Image (cartoon, rainbow, N blue to C red; front, side, top):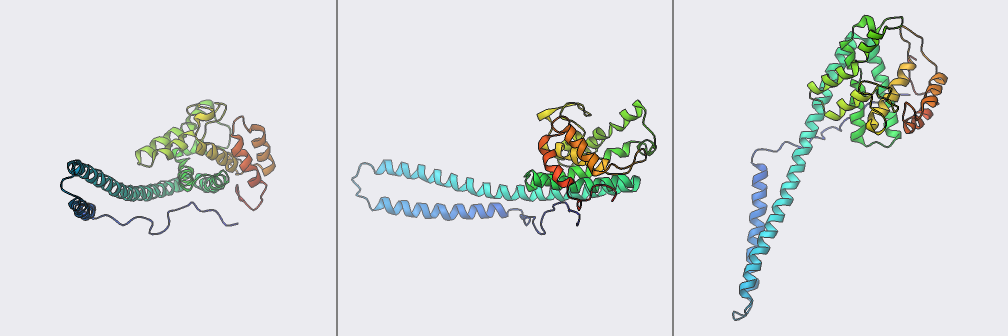
Amino acid sequence: MEPIEAPKPPPNSTPPPLRRGHVAIRISAYFLIASTAWVVFSDTLIGRLPAHLSFITSMQISKGLAYTVAMTALLYIMLRRWEKRLRAAATAREAHMAEAMADAITAMLKLRDPFTSWHTNRTVELSVRLGRALGLTREEIATLVLAARLHDIGNTGIPTEILNRPGPLSAPERALVQTHARIAYEMINQAGIPAPVAELVLQHHERLDGSGYPQRIMGEDIALGALILAVADVVTAMASHRPHRPAHDRDAIVAELREQRGIRYDASVIDACLPLLADASIPLGDA
């Protein structure tokens, strides 16, 4: 089965840049046309009424008020339209910048630790499948994908001799490895990548029962994207060979997920993941 690629903005999705003064000219033109039409119409209407009618003055006042309200509404509508265009352009630019930054960071990580890079790709693929199964929006999946791509970049702050040690780690070494989530969070923030991505990365080792790290938060305090990323990370890590242990088979992974369903891992995420594990065509580990 072909690997799932991260959703990307469609070509030419960025709105065309707005030239300086262009917005003001268009709004002014609309304002002028509407103002002229309103004045001509209202003056013509009032001019046809008998001059002796006592409500002429009140109608003139009402005309002025109506004119002000109408023009204010028109300006508001026009400004809102252009505000949306400007925000869309800024969001698209931000997304492209975040993707470029993620590309640079993951390329660096691949040179330093090929396994982490490979594991990241599998985690991205499974995260996308889980996100779709749980009904995440396109924007939420895009955030999840970026977080999955960057979730282990904190390993650059951990000595490779510790990451790749064939034997068990000492307590201080294990504590050092657990700092990688916080390191990744700081790196992502410094890179200017959107804050929701950094939060998912920071929380991807948290567990429902509070046994995770680095914040030891639990339950509803953990973002759904982080709960998804946690399961995808665990599954792909268990399915992979590491220096200190062989890869686990699918039966062992399923047993772990079922045992910890609703305890360490979110039940809805596990329920979405189990059918995927039953599909042998979906790659998980080294194979």
